[in-house]
Image 1 (cartoon, chains in turn brown, red):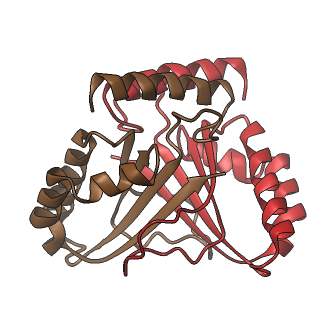
Image 2 (cartoon, each protein chain N blue to C red; image 1 turned 90 degrees about the vertical axis):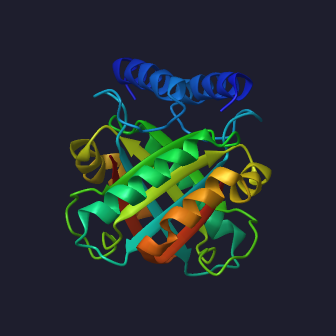
Length: 132
Length: 132
């Protein structure tokens, strides 16, 4: 992340927090686009495979258009019929806009991640959401 | 959101941004828990129903344990086999921990939202993710 974009994120983050929101799109520089990806491993019992995937996901924050990254696993929340906790890892990325997401898709760091890690998962589900 | 928790969020947000991340859990006060809910409307063609649901979702930011809220609709991203853009609205909430999410579930504002809006949707999928 360049210093310029980091400053934009800090400023926008402060504005968002002042309104008690993340991504409420009160300013044009606020990260409006959420890219949330859920991964199901081929070998769910392999701690090594999970660790390798999580490490790969963490490399994605170096991509210039990424405004925020949250790498996680299912929380031990109360089981509810509507909750899907069957995935093994998730990446949540913020971008300013669709152009940022498209730049990410073709970025060498993202391509390297796919080359290194795509053999680990058997299923991926992606949600791209824009704030309104 | 109380002033105390708002300050915590601002401080945590700045720390997260300085590391180029959101939710990377470098500090104990950082919102680690992501609660992402996708809604499918009973009447997808009704702009009024969508507006009512989005308005209802925006009331949730007033709940004390909510550290951030992103209300959105599917972005016009490139169609990809792994992408699910069939939902009609999404809410992305940050909490400090599972206790914050549990307090939210039973909060009067959340219950009011369910009472007011649950007739609007036919399907909901929830993902609770904790940063690692």
